[in-house]
Length: 219
Image (cartoon, rainbow, N blue to C red):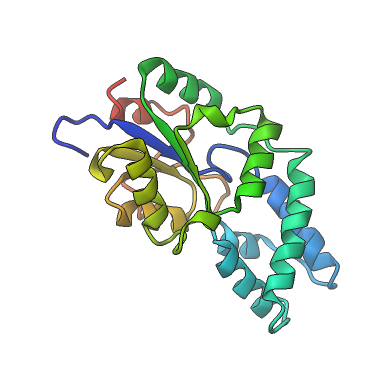
């Protein structure tokens, strides 16, 4: 955290952090596996959470024993997720209230997701959150190296006009936490599914309603 003890901007992860999209992703993943006579397990979910499209494609090839089919598998999964997100993508507990408080305080916000822009747009629409809420929305398809690389968070800081050391990142996955910390952002973890190791974060809190978040912003 900066010397004043106050952070100046906030970058939200999307899936599982800002929005409860993990349930929709899980239903899509279960359907993809079921089409191939396989079961999608809780351990699979923990391995996949926060992964980039490329990492997910490589993982699907290996787990489903479909060498060379990664691009087809990730496309099929993406279409299944798109259908699910049209039905269910509510804000996570405390998300709407936190956004309102940040907006009232004039604290700039960005969204940085390892998902493709098409899926992020659909989820925000279903959740009823305007894209204009954020000064910038960055997704996996606009960076060369998605999370766990720091590129997307560094780009978000640049878009917000803030230094990484003065920026709060909110994440729910080890992949995202690694990216936020590598970017030198103050990274708070908010768990979305049980059993995920988030110990690499600057701080772990229970939800987006936790007072530690607004305290870090001097609110």
